[in-house]
Image (cartoon, rainbow, N blue to C red):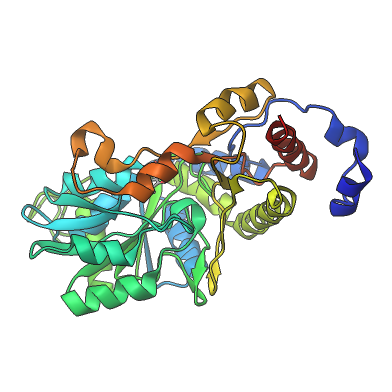
Length: 386
Ligand SMILES: *Cc1c(COP(=O)(O)O)cnc(C)c1O
């Protein structure tokens, strides 16, 4: 390793970083003895379905973490979004504005309610939904705005909530990628009427599959719990006053969740450390744009991502297999929703399209070592000089 790199990264061990390590996944869950112990406890107790002590404990601990009154667990993040929309009575005839650049579940959850997702473009720098384009996409049928804190960066909730107030709309955060992200000291999941999270294996914490709805509104909390449990009246067993869902989390999932809550602060701190390393090391490579952390924001860098520009000698698509040959896993950005067969639309979202063709998620698990980050960055630096 050259001495300049050592000056930049005094914590690096020379021999380690010059040797290609084993395959580096783009993400992996961090599961330990505590997860094992709590799952075993749940199995041994016989409480393996939705009743069981871990469910309530996980909900309380997650609510405390977000600093929100209520957290309602669900069996995955997609149905958490659906439940939140259903609790707001969004349905046929309504339009919900969703960023074009997101994971498909954001749009699908709207579709499940019978409402129509309408796509707004994103900001070229922060990659989250652009309030100016939201305003352009408003129609008399618009009922709600669903920003996504994409890759861990908070969406501009001040502007979105202002738009919502001005036009009498609801706001729902899709916080699936942003546990612990903050805007003006407020955590993701608390900046709108209702919000949702995901705990699938690659998210910031995991329960295998799992999700959570968060809200400060007592009425919405009750409504979510009612709809999640087949819409059964608690005082009248097997009496269902409307069509509900079975969207409950199991005690087995919640056991993993309670164990993960003991590490969530460390995961986030480590992810921010990893992002700072990537930032330092990649800053001077021409043709790569790096993630930002806008003023007053805390980015949790769910996926540390780069955007490959024209000045870089390789395209994003050429880069993926070359990195893979060198044992580095990566993922392209999502396709814009309005280019997918179920959602083809002619209202253009050119920034989402451009980012979608150039954006790349780099390995981002909190288990990444400093040496692995250095190796990934050195590989990109070498490729930049081809
Ligand atoms: C992961 C994710 C979801 C869905 O979560 P699942 O738990 O996989 O159903 C929803 N929205 C976004 C933005 C996501 O990244």
